[in-house]
Image 1 (cartoon, rainbow, N blue to C red):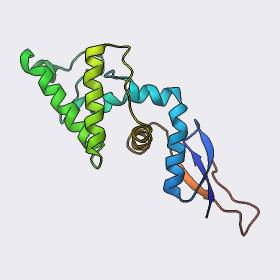
Image 2: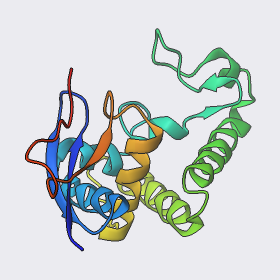
Image 3: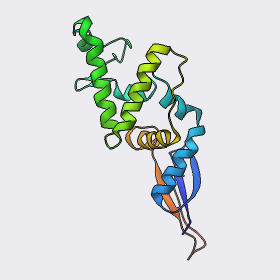
Image 4: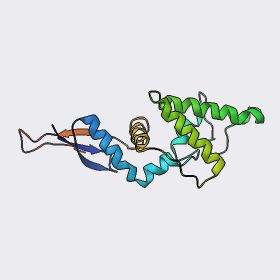
Length: 168
């Protein structure tokens, strides 16, 4: 049975999706976000602030960059220089594996593309599959503050002529 779902992400987006279930609606919504330039920049850009990588750039003591200066934090600078990059990379890998805890192959792919981007430079374009993008977009929506609020509501006008979807 095909249903319709209203999806809103705060004030920034509102859409209607035709799907079999709420989860299928979320998947179709995520597929639609592949064409969103900001979302693709979030995933494809390997910068330590303003991208998905930022969510992995920390340890149990906090973010590796100082909030004020944007430079490496004093706790990271306290690590011997020859060990510093290994320390950072080990935590990026750990955090990526936690983010894709049920899809370790996606964490491995992301880390491989991150390494390639370091070798190729700023213009590097990662090669992720549509499935990777859909899964990652759904995780970004669920696990970060990408949207101020996010809700998927089934639209059911079978027995009525009116259904309130959202009231501010």
